[in-house]
Length: 112
Length: 114
Image (cartoon, rainbow over all chains, first blue to last red; front, side, top):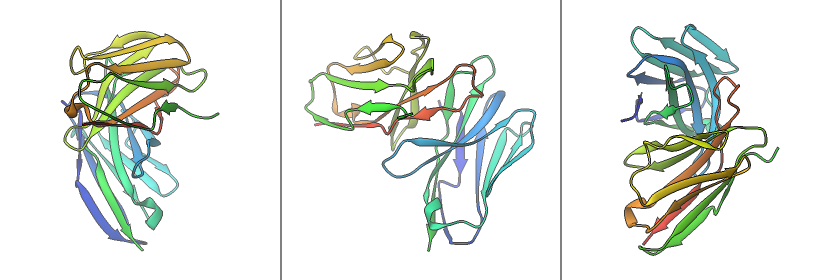
């Protein structure tokens, strides 16, 4: 079964607005990653947050991690049409650090 | 670096035929992963290798699927015989074992079994 589940499944916003996606997972982790997938393409790594970190920033991306709730959120600020893509969280379970399991994904559409 | 290279990008075949998907990982990466993506099941980890050795193949759906990594620069995923339910996009990804965990994905092989 999949480790993570994203919420919402789909999100449509206007350019310039912020987009927030959530991820929940089931077991203890070493770190949590977020990936982006443009239609018909492979996944691209965005950001990694370790289990002992609570928040991390990278450009317009902000990731939070709450290990007590087994959840993470990805915030994209000042969205652009080019941010339109699917976004996935991925976790590696403790004791299986090489086994990266992906969530169900959030399809983000940014309207120009 | 050229990134992870997969071939073919698209494959259409008939049920019962053998399918071989190929992957060249990024040079210097010693972990290689095969994933399958479908609308119904999302991204599933099929198998992964460390230093050319299969470590976990618990995601391989059944005996019709097999994967090999004869050397550090090449891996294959074979389906024999293929069935319509095998239709999916198959991704190969690689990483350096010493890295923090970021996977580098290929562009995928879209398989359609008629």
